[in-house]
Length: 206
Image 1 (cartoon, rainbow, N blue to C red):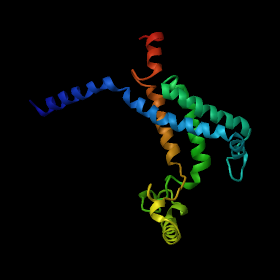
Image 2 (image 1 turned 180 degrees about the vertical axis):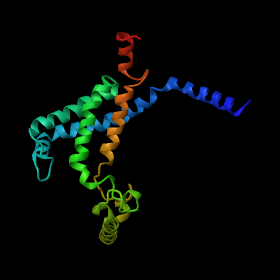
Image 3 (image 1 turned 135 degrees about the vertical axis):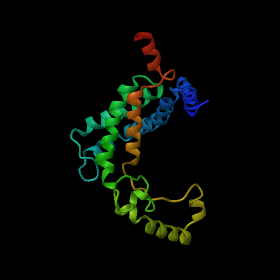
Image 4 (image 1 turned 60 degrees about the vertical axis):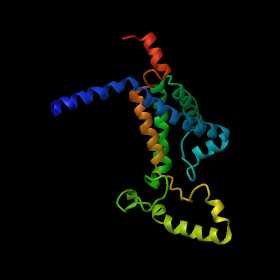
């Protein structure tokens, strides 16, 4: 048997895995839904503070009609998160959520560059890609904090759940969520794993 025949047979076997193609969007949905729902729930729980943050040009977003914008963001995250969780109107729900992620990325996180965590050893902080002073000064700040805590605090207990890091608050998380939502926009909720699939099968048979 030639190499070409072997490759063809292997490809045919691989393509049989398409019967499970609904698993990929299902995993994206199960990952994204709690994140979106929690974000919306947190904003709703402190609605006045959320409105103030949306309104303030000094420490917030400086957006017009802040109460309306905050309400729309909360609705997108809460309702959109629930819809994505069950796979109902998945493509439609992903649109306002993608918009929300882009607003967050470019109005809140953009000045901080890409990394969510300040890591001066990362190639993203090499001085050519999104250079950020907060990232570059992180090692000195961590060393100072470690020294103070070792001298005056219970350092072993404080770090027993993980090492300390400095939050850079870059666009990494917002854009990661955006790309995941964009994927769901194109794939939908997933074959056999979403309400959308069964509704489409019932009302829009091919």
